[in-house]
Image (cartoon, rainbow, N blue to C red):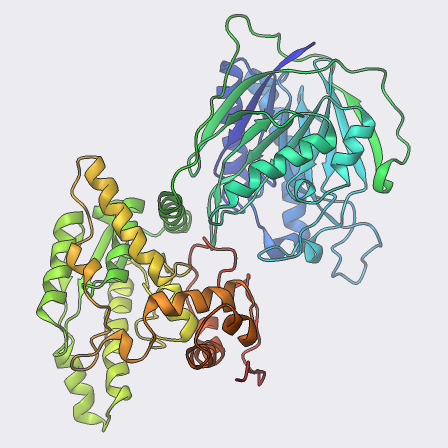
Length: 585
């Protein structure tokens, strides 16, 4: 049986940076070649980044993607890597965009993969299954492919597939079995959500059994706006054996030797399962099989949930800051748990020298809030500043007659003005720090504490914020480091401190009561009856649902933030602002 040395390049491309992404392919292909690889895989839409959204409709961008692909093939050959087959995702089109007046049935933009060899594009494949749920809108952008591409590499028939092809039964994997392939390649841009790694391995096992062949699965890593990709690349045999698995949230090269069945007599190109045709290509020569011990990519075990989420939040923020070329970030430090966790994430993401934390006390700020903010700054080493807001608030009140909630919101808005002024003056990205529970019920001040360009904890329920803080401190202790988050910030009752003696519990149920209701309603789409049947108090359910339903206009104006749950606010959950439907009791 032939042996192929595979290289899975789990890398971090940037949307729109065609030259930079091609440079990643060249440098990582060189590393793979130096490790003796005979076949190299890169993620879905590697050349353009993913998702490209409405850039798909720009014919100039599609043309640039295709030109970059052919230029990359020539550059790899010029780099002395011409004999090494490289599979890379790119944007293609065989017709006008589907939204254009000259659209043609069955033709248009394609989510595509290509195999590059000896300076040429020797094979292409168009994604068959297009996801159109959650954060995905691929039916809006792409036309599905109807052909399975099989490439003979080193005497082995290898099928090409892309991401969603794996998530649906039938289609390419069923056709791969009928085509008698010895290996299926699956290139992916599969966004992270909590526990997705627990779903991914069983899924790959099911598809390997369906195809009757091993699957080499490579996934993107890195942040793109709200999305973060966790990697978790792997190779699984037809009987479900996990051979190798990459770490999450870091770039990584997996090199592994795989013994595969030799190809038989090539079949035809007629219609098979699901109406898909099979098109076959052959690569005449690849690098010689390496001598010496077999390459083993190793198996990295998954980490605890809190560690997984923390790494996702850090990577999502780091890439948002760096890919958008912000020099630094600034955020308000209240001494509370949310700003403390957001600050710790920021320091882990970009380093303390690029994080500015501002304490903005008012006459209602407790002494422990000020000292806790200062303690956090000392623990993390960030740039700490104090900007008292009371004189500014008093100036407003001297010119306007305000009371009650208006005065409370005025304080939050003065703080927002200070942070935006520092952003304008010094170039920082403002981070807002409202958690998912607060966003759900509208417990924030529009243009006040909600101000900012990015929210590291936007998709983190309040109860999970506390868990993350405890995990991060414990992790620091394990490493012999100073825990970044003051224990007092973790232990004290949460409060906005906008009026004397104010606590969150004055307005909201306790978070251990609130969060399960919100998770059922927001993430699970349960109605009132379903929530009550789950054991929640009907009166509390009614109150919470009213708050959620009437806060949609606030959420529409909230900053983007890293998605870590099954349903994040934003593209995952799309509800009308003007909406009279209520889950009445």
